[in-house]
Image (cartoon, rainbow, N blue to C red; front, side, top):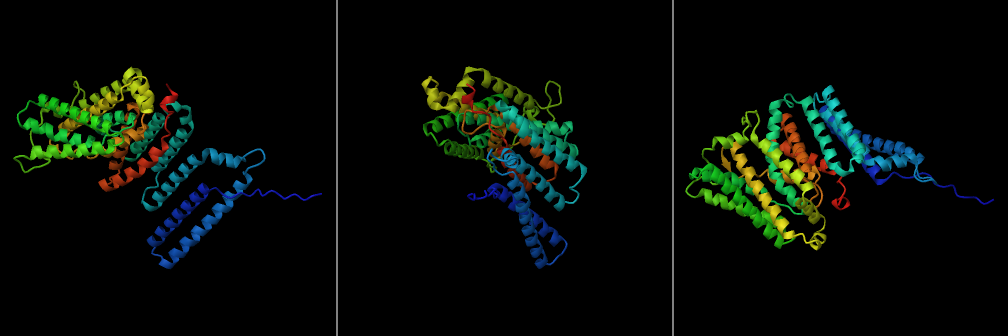
Length: 459
């Protein structure tokens, strides 16, 4: 008989599992260090205890998980059950582990954080994660929208249970008001993104329209005429952006940023002539404009500002129009492949310039409406929309490469961002902490959104 070598069934852990074990061990050791210093232990004891904790954790992680991995290793019939489970659900499992570790850290570091409402909130987040990773696969056509609605529901539920007054009618009206401003500002960014472009001049047009409108009114121009002038100028600036970025293909980012700075500087030069308040304009805002955008505004006698209704109408027109009209289908076709679209006689230049014109128009409209809300002109009123419009588009599920998504997705992204912002404010965090947490949460939220099937698979 010839001896045959016994196959080595022991397999090493994959790199991902080892990294997860190392990160978890470091977090556990870090918690131990924090707790040690809080208990006034000596530095030597804290260091030795943290090293021992990390070593024991890594040994246990590799030994215990390694045993399961060995049992579930590859066989002649293919991967074992443990390996199949890991390959199929490794990302949801990692997400669950990250949420549980984060909850543990917060419970150990924040007094009173571990309570029944936060436990319920944790369970809601875990349920949402499971649903988005399972049921989401059944909604491939609009998977981004499904995930967005789930995240939005979870955020609102957690806020309603943990923050007093979060679900009150007044706070909901406030969230919808600011969502309307962001939603209108994101119209152009969405349309441009569907073609594979970007418009970084939006915040500057918003600030310029805000200051310019009040400046015209203070000069004695009738308010209705001043609004028309501002909207027309915004439209023309969008046309200029479109022409320049089309001629300089691949440079839309720099072109729109440059024109934005020029717009901002030009408006400040114009409004500072004969005054010491550069960048700010003081005057009286017409009552009808204040009613459009203020919290106390009414719509046909109903207690909500008309800007919310304006946003709803714009959203419905765009959502329906983009999906049912030839113009909308051509726009998607251009975003998918410019070469293929040109072969069927679709004018790329006309669509490109039109979308940038639309972006300038809605940016100017947002600036005018913000004047009714604030009551004073300020050139920096649109600064926050540089990041927020891009975030709303991406979080909603519209690809920045073009041809995929739509304004309906952006509406969901706007609502997610606004509820998240209101949640952070309700926690009492200052602006710096809000920006820090906001940025950290945007990254996994964007990573969570699996892109919907490309448009070429649908036409």
